Image (cartoon, rainbow, N blue to C red; front, side, top):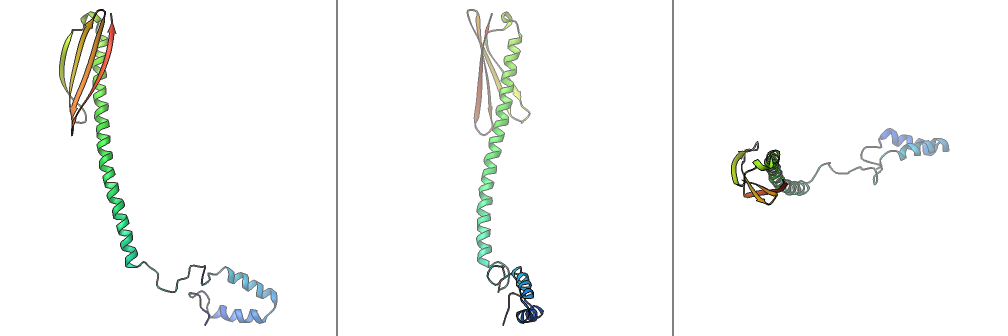
Length: 164
């Protein structure tokens, strides 16, 4: 019996017989039409029910689970790095602000010594800002240190030299 997943019906079979018995131009036209239909081997016809087996579904779920766990770990790392970047940016702004404030003061009015103040940032972290002014001849060395603690202790230091 001639069968291709339901693509060839009774009418097509009768047409096949008629064309095989008829003239060559009709036969060629019919063969051209039939070449466009799916075949048993190359047209994607399946002889069994469509769908996935239980093993295929389980393997896909395992692959998906492993991928999602890797992405979850990556998200934690990304969030920590992003948070640290925000804190570092805020700390450097506080340090530069103090350096600019001291540079704006006349050289003679900058007092020597170590000073400390607390600053609270917009990220909710408390920063400790220390600045140390040392004079050597006609030069004043200003060191501004900012420290903060989130999960661990962090600090940055900016140094500037002013001349008379």
